[in-house]
Image (cartoon, rainbow, N blue to C red; front, side, top):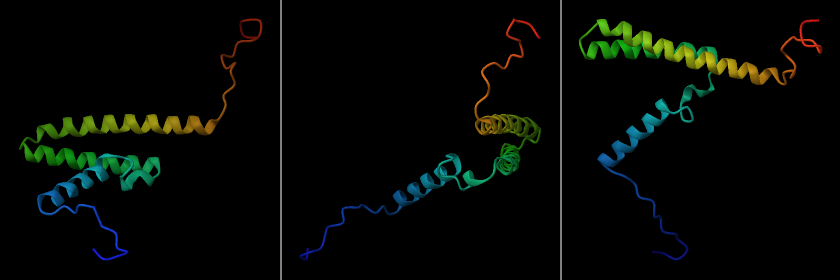
Length: 115
């Protein structure tokens, strides 16, 4: 090695190693929200995109197993789960924006019942 040069100890994968790392990066970009390009979408648009993708993948799954009857069950299950997740996320987001809620919110008067 020449004077003043530093040795590069980083290992660069080749062949199957490069392929496996590429698959790992693709998996991260699709399956984790931290790496997904969809993380910056507004919640309503994200819901629409995820619903379209879930119906698409349900159709692909039904075609792969050559059973069109399974499409309805798979798509319906995906729609229910995704809608539940997004409705919960939107409610939590709205609750954070609302700020402090008064502690005495039960509508009873100081004497006990409605006054």
